[in-house]
Image 1 (cartoon, rainbow, N blue to C red):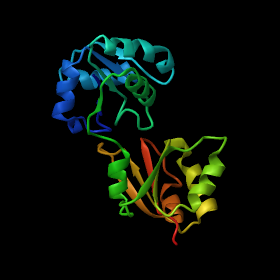
Image 2: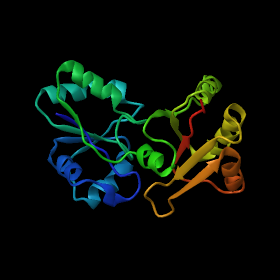
Image 3: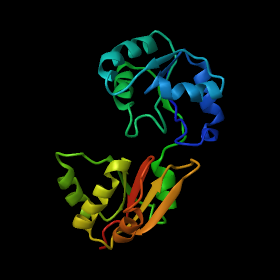
Image 4: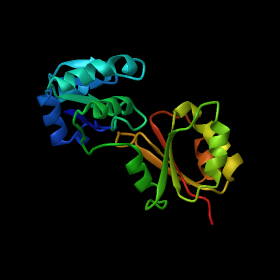
Length: 222
């Protein structure tokens, strides 16, 4: 069995009982960054062998991992935070495991965009998750496409690119478009800013922006 195990996006107490049980019971844990994962595993008394599995080696290691699954081993995949496969490594391994006939199960648990979407106070019955927008090639095309999207949109952004994204939203969607920005979800300095693009820009203009960022954007009006 290949288990995809969500880990907290901030507060360690968000770890589920079942996640701890699975990570203690499997033969191997694959971690996006072993240095990041070790403190969490140590906190919960998890001493299972650990191996790196990230975007730079997943094409080289996926076949050998699948072979171990087919030999009867149970393996868990975790990432630095949140649910594997959501803007993190996981898809390639899942696809190859399924193709080989291995069992795959994703545990329910933490992911950053869900609390950010709910906290935004924007409609969340229908939404579009875009993950990280392209950094260069295709970015403006993506923004033009999203400008006419009528559903609520959710994107991830890095702190040093956030002000640039707000400028781009202003250009493509207008300064009055409603948005919400959630930062450091479930951590000590967590905050959510809500308002028009122009209002949020003015709040952030002279700030040193840090932490993980989720941007929620109101859909275009009919």
